Image (cartoon, rainbow, N blue to C red):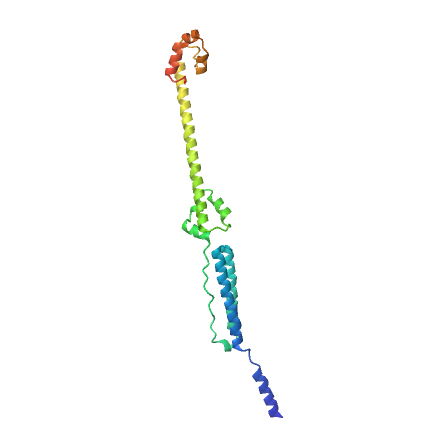
Length: 218
């Protein structure tokens, strides 16, 4: 009777084994294959422009997290799987953020003047490096145009001021040196001269000629 009980105990002990390690290997391999396929699919979608770089980076991060969970599970499996080596997730080339690449190449570009406002506007837009470079050229062009416009306006204003100063100087000089018979230092215009009769012109001819010589009548 005792022998029978011992046999029963041995029989129970022998059946309390862990699941077949080959079953774990097959399931884990399928999961790893699926992750690699998903990673390749994400890479292809980014290359085709179907998803943005930031979206692709997020998906790759999620796939890598799943892969780490699988590896953690494999290490928790009993010693029957000790010889099973984890298969590395295929390395996926995730493009660097285009804005970060541009700033690396031009670290001070968006630090000048009002360019920080431009950066705040475009930093969250889905653009590639070429598009960012085009915007940078547009910004530079607008700045150059604004500077040129300011310089031209300043030069024009200076020219007007110089002309006004010359005209005032001529008027002052004429007023100081005008003949006694000058009509109260009056400066004639072309319209005034055009409306004069022959007698009026003859009367004021000397004064008119003096004003013409001094550039007061144009």
